[in-house]
Image 1 (spheres, helix red, strand yellow):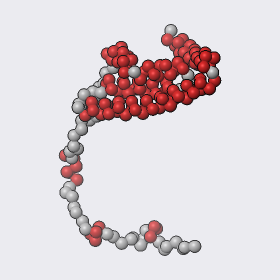
Image 2 (tube, helix red, strand yellow):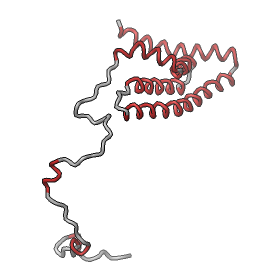
Image 3 (cartoon, one colour):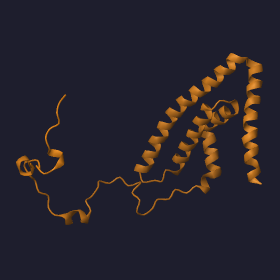
Image 4 (cartoon, helix red, strand yellow):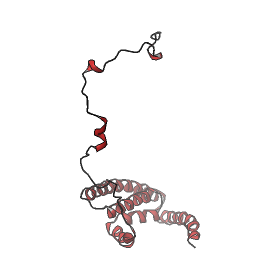
Length: 171
């Protein structure tokens, strides 16, 4: 039954957007309709940039504090979807995009899907640990570090090497 909804959505959504263009175009006129479409795209880009940086800071803060940033990740995903919806031409996508930028709507969506989302961190993963790197025990098995001066590691070119043959002629 769900497979039937996908083609219906793929056909119905563009038709609904076209109908929205026609209705808004009749009510406001051509130039105002085009101005609204371009304005919402610019607004979407601005909101995506501002809200996106705020969400990235929130994710970073939660990760640094050792908490799983599940809610912040979902908020970030919804903001990206909202920005894409506003960038797409159409009034239905603009309404959905603007709604997703409202924190209350995102909280409502989180309350519905939040129980189903689980952020898992593997025991070997260091995703949420911000510690100074420690050398592994295997690193010391290679031997001590030898500090050499420039004349100690300088060597002359090998005359038998094909790369050190006669210099190429200059034009």
